[in-house]
Image: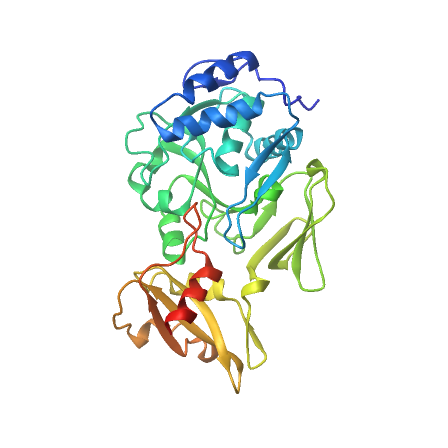
Length: 358
């Protein structure tokens, strides 16, 4: 039987203490008076979770458009938490770490999973090195790639880690392969109540094929005529979610992400996905960068490279792994990229800045 969102698992603990639904309201009021911003954010979410409304408002990240407030059904959030728990075999009294801000869906869902599944959840400040002062081990945690990059020295404290919020670069994946922690990339968005699929990046069988995304229990996927992913998650209580993510579908439950259809570059009839080139070049370029395009009379569009920071010379050898038509025809530098409030590069606004200065 699926628990109601108004219920709190009798094994749930937050920072070492069990709370009932009534207790959580008192905890929330105390947290919003705290000096630490991340504590206040947790308190504000708990107030929303324990109020009389069956929905709550969540802001999207804004990485693919203007951030907007959307309403999520609390019961759907409960079912999303259960799906994650089933996939990762999370049991009551398992330990979990909250090191993401509770302002966005990923942080909110760590709290919901703990409340619903009966996890023992501890919270720490969501900075770039969240494990630095952690002195115990945890069964489950979630991070963004920046946190993972800065946490390898302490990563033995985590048994299973999910990573999302931004692309995971190829050089980071090479480091992940060396880790004894089971690490998964996630696919999802605010509208799908965090991830609906995960990809295991390491600790895989030696003869297994390349890693692909596998959907959570009770999630169905298909393609539209653009080869973009369609998501059917019954617990969302909504119509099909048609994304702008171009994917390769391997089965009814597995797929791989190629890139956003909005970003596809058509150069001489060849379709190029910038995200794939960025992953290839990530270990070769020390600055943040994006692959984009500009008009070309012959090709229609040509590939360009946009680098953040002061201008410097990039060696031609860094492009040796690219096919001829993938090599950037021009390189531009922008002092500061435009970013969303969650730290993701805003491609549209960054490229608008480039148009103004080039």
